[in-house]
Image (spheres, rainbow, N blue to C red):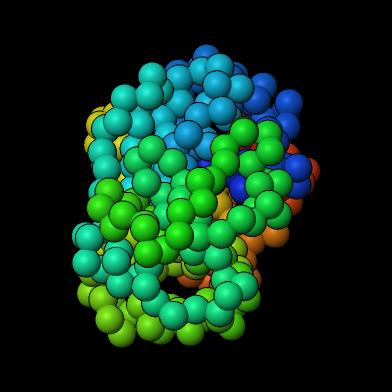
Length: 265
């Protein structure tokens, strides 16, 4: 048997509509690990937000967090990290934006946000991950893995244009949802992080099976030998990834169902 790496996005992909792991998903991934395969989770979420799911799976799992800015091994050792340079990070913090658009920074230690936003905590309720409110003028531009804007898609589109105009060559800009604009350093994405992980594991891209649902999954899915796009995916994602297979809805544990058939579990 050839060992494979199964790597999956979380929200909208591996997690259900309640942002939790299905029991079926846990059982299938444990079976695949027992058969000698590797498992990784790749998300825009912070490492401290993701490790709860790793612990629930209770098998060795690599974590690619903050859209590829950080890679951790199964015991929590940091394998790689990439931060925005301080100057573009400071510029992004200071970009003018409507008051209803929230500004967040993902740093090594946690999540800073510019104002209270209780509605954002619902998707993190199962992990207990929470933010610290820091006024923009006091936000530190050093050690930033990701700048995140949350709000109206039209306002985010304008912010994207502004970010491209001032520091476009130094940034990787993507969306995790239509109302979530995410900016990392140039060359930082899930695909680059996945390539480094495959090399560490001694596997080729052909031995990788990847699952995703949104634009920040594009590079990861393009790299994988077998790419699966969720039925609930962003409309543009399927067209961006040549050869991808469309599978079921994340609310129906479609990843686990597909893997069960693929490996005849």
